[in-house]
Image (tube, rainbow, N blue to C red; front, side):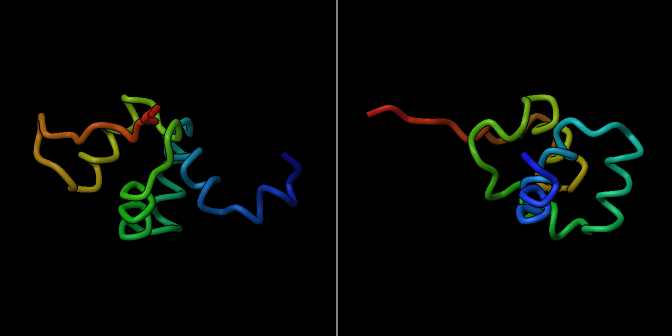
Length: 79
């Protein structure tokens, strides 16, 4: 994806930083986007956007769940 294409998809960029960013990247995106934006993004996450580890981390980090209550990740259902 070109930089121009990426800029046109800010939700995807933020989700990628949430999933694979290092500590500094994650802190910067959390500060710039805000927790409400990140919560909304997580609630409407697409299939494959997050690894199980980052999915669990962000649910805990954003106060969406209590320990051991992480919802299942989005899944593709084949009919």
